[in-house]
Image (cartoon, rainbow, N blue to C red; front, side, top):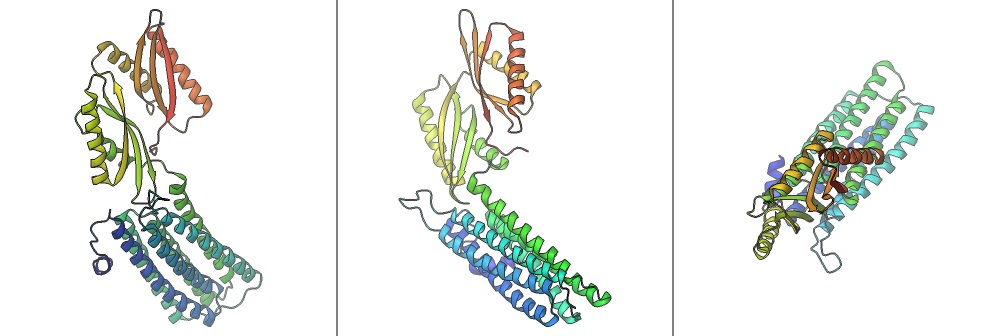
Length: 392
């Protein structure tokens, strides 16, 4: 069903990196979400009024909030698809994140309202009428939500959309909520226990948790996320595949929406290379990365020693010492300045974010101590950095 809808309503659906195609995917998901949730809202509200169930009506308004969320997502996707202009040279892709954030606040507000109504129901319980036909209809809504979850998850994975993946997670929460509502009605019908208000509280808590989860997922790209390790490997391997590039470090990627990314990276080149040729290589890499990965990449060249055996031996010595002290640490930009009375070892040290200031200073002291054990003439000039890549 999902593939059929995609083929019918998304032109050039295989070109998932194309901004217009992504917008079409987003619009399709939004329209389908609105239609399904409005239908479910009408059915559940009618059921809730007939059997006098606050939990059923709570579930109905949760579907209404989902429909409103789909409308906001639709607007966000349309705005995100606008081209770059002089005020916004990186496009309007972040509108998608802003729309999802607005959706999360709406969901949280609905959850808080439902929590209040359910709490009132706990204090003043009422009898819930049990009707097998109505329970069956609620069961059907679970199947609809299950399909919506799989629909959004599949499209979200296909175009790597954080918003769609969050919507899929929200649908999973709705499934649990509706199942809880069914359980409440069944227990009330069999035992006569008035637990409707308590189940309504559970429903409202699920709604609030879903809203907070979506807010968290959408705030992260707005605040700036660590680089996904798979993307990091993909970019660095591509840059390092070109002749004349010895290594890379300090990759930084800024996201201006799912299809608008800008990155900077330091590319290590031999210090005896012809710099005009190196510059041509760098320009070619930047063009190729933009064409094949849709990332606007700016490359900074770092000349490094590749021939001096003495320098390379000292670099290997430092790497060996650091690896033994902290396997997760690494170095780059290693240089050696040989003086009359001392030998300066200059390098940048990359350590995990989990290190406290005290642990950082202890590691630094241990590194300097172990290096000076090799030769008292060694003087270390170390710049401490943190990686921009997500830690495993």
